[in-house]
Length: 317
Image 1 (tube, rainbow, N blue to C red):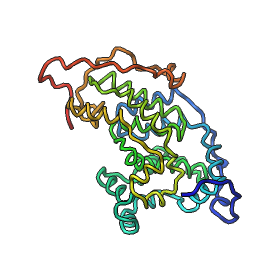
Image 2 (cartoon, helix red, strand yellow):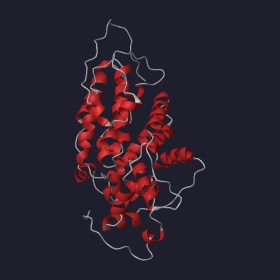
Image 3 (cartoon, rainbow, N blue to C red):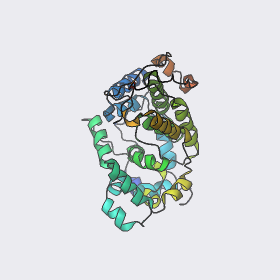
């Protein structure tokens, strides 16, 4: 995996024929009130992935176009652009991955993970297409890069060991903040953790887990800028070492505490989960959120002990 170097574009390549930014592309703008609305809609029904897309649409990474331009001016960026036009074609071809990649490689671990979780890269693409509705694809270089941010999401779950539970999705958002610095990732993480604290009686240090994930993510190379074909050839431990992925200790501590408390992480904040409000602090308002992530410098408060033995405050799945 070579280091990047700035080079000229090759005539006749995909990079020379696909526009950097489509003429119909509208410059991204922030609208924190609209984003906040979609955050709460997602909280009501966590199966509505479209609400997450709408959330980030209103809290975009404003510097992404310039970052994409810089990345695609490098030899590495151009190589990845030419050889990996659409990641789901690679990631969802499990027969090919198992046949052509070595046993024990990340490719096999990825297939096992996706099959165990019942996931596919194409499934996430479909959810995004449903969100986009009648709006046409722009098929420019910016969209290619944005697609890779989406399509590597589940691979990053596997590599970081951050799960797909409510806290896990929030922690992964904080983890990737350095790779794609939209404050939406921090708001989704910290505000989501605050909602857990406000509604679930638990000792789990959920806010610290978000902060720890954010700090851990600082050392991780942007996975969207890697050759995924090359990454899949090595072992999962080698891939973690190459990317700079270390342990996310406080997220795992939350999982361990929830196991002790009889709480199923996948059921947290679900409509049928029995939870108890114990935190008096209000969830941050849109005005507070607009000031940035510094408002989330909160101290963990220990939860009250369960009041009576046998009182069932939480249900397992």
